[in-house]
Image 1 (spheres, helix red, strand yellow):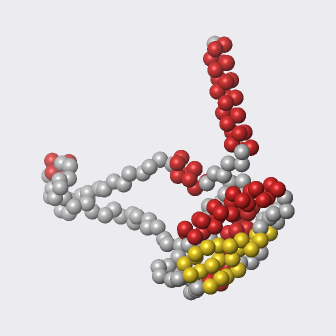
Image 2 (tube, one colour; image 1 turned 120 degrees about the vertical axis):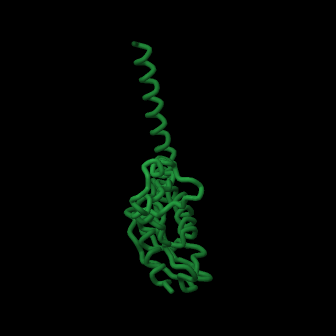
Image 3 (cartoon, rainbow, N blue to C red; image 1 turned 45 degrees about the vertical axis):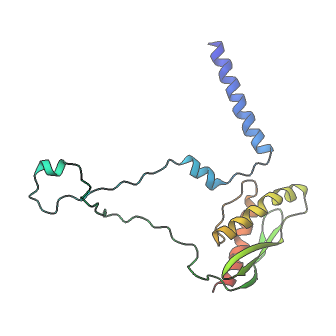
Length: 183
């Protein structure tokens, strides 16, 4: 019993240490990636419709569908992903500066550069940079947020763990910049 208790304490200490080490190292975790990794994969299934007439025998109804039997759609519609921006050129070309947003430790303001109707880059006009901790956090978060905004072609980006306030302020400022750029 003592060995089991000691083993449980060692494992618990290791888990606690790992958690503290990840927090202290300033690890940037993407909440969307973590949620995707934690959710189980869903395998789509098809169902065949019951016979069209009520005269089918019970043996025929219990037989599995053959290759010649077509799958019938179900009554519930399948949700389709909705694009965040319409097809074609969604934005006017140019540079559009968003409003200043408060990020608790300073202010954030970004400028969206649009070319060919698409976001080509997002430039940081101002961001919290008066403390060494803010400089460190923004050196990690700013490129991540900028890259994701260009990739998604919208202000709908994932929050950066450890830079939550800056992430929200980035989203607010970029949203106002893209509102000005709407075609």
